[in-house]
Structure formats: C-alpha cells, structure tokens
Length: 119
Ligand SMILES: [Zn+2]
Image 1: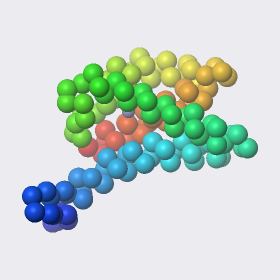
Image 2: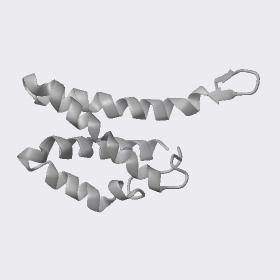
Image 3: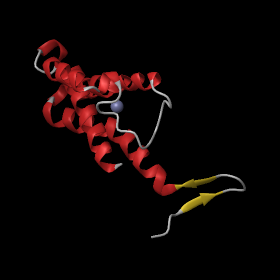
C-alpha cells in the first residue's frame, strides 16, 4: 500500500502518520461529550467541559524525553498514566464531588489505552 503524502519544496508530511494523533486528540474531546450527553441530562455541557479539561493530565508528558513520541504508550509510562494513578481515578469516580474528574480521567486513560493498541 502506498503512503499518501503532502509535499511542498522541503517538507513532506505523511497523512497516514498524522491520522492517528489527530484522531486521538479529537477523541479526547468527542468521547467525554458523548458520555456527558447520554448520562448527565441537562448538565451535559458543564459535565463535558470538566471531563474534557482532564486532558491537562497530559502535562506529565513534559517530564519525558522526548515530550511526545508517537510510538510510545502513555499507559504505565508517564506518572499520571500509571496503573496506581488509574486506580486513584477509579476511586475519584465513585465520590460524588470528584465523579466528573475521575470519569474524565478514566475516559482519557481508556482512549490512551486504545492508542497503545493502535501503535
Ligand atoms: Zn494521556
């Protein structure tokens, strides 16, 4: 199968290589929106916003070198993506006051886990 490429004089970007990270990033906003819409009734917009904002958990990537590696699995590598952290997110999702944060983080980890399979 040939790789579709966009080329200018010196820069060639592989569309195939961009599809996964762009899809992954979009899913970090779309998936919480879908969950919020179907489970939080009229509060869905604020629920979506809180869950989508949990993407700041990716700040732990700043501790890694390189900061972004498309072939690295985040789960179990970055501190806020560790298995212990995921257990804490599970606990947070059971406490009413932190439920949305915990749920958003669990959705985030699930999407990152799917991305690990896609690598
Ligand atoms: Zn992540």
